[in-house]
Length: 153
Image (tube, rainbow, N blue to C red; front, top):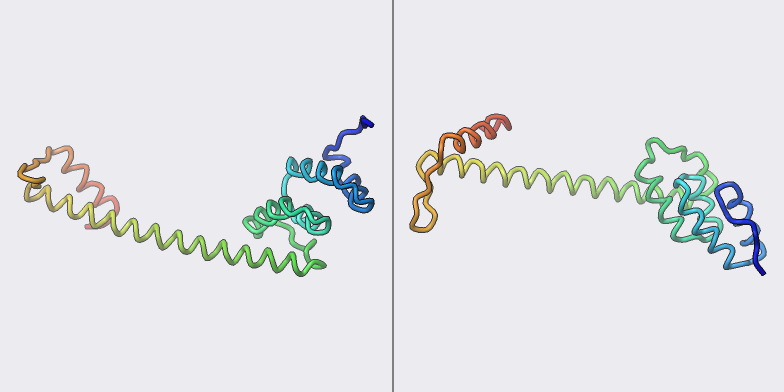
């Protein structure tokens, strides 16, 4: 039998509850697909947890954790396992951000070493194999300006 009602943002919540209660799995899966088009939120996170929508849960949890400073987390007060999951994700985000910051600093230090080396080679003339490479005034000015601009002198 064909139905004429399509699942959309206006009816998805009611149809999801209906499909879960009566265990109409194909309809529940259709609701899950429809929810992917809606913005993730803490409310949608709780809904995904309640109805066992794992992909929707992961999507919403990632979004809520990354925007936790702006998100209304009060809806999670009655869902400690979900709140704990968000806290773990926030903690992992902080650890990842710190690791990225350290890596960026390491890359900057390596770049600084390379720039110093290039600048020093420009001062004495650089050899590549048996060839002596000479730098023009533009190249020398560009490197020394970069070093000065980054306050590495």
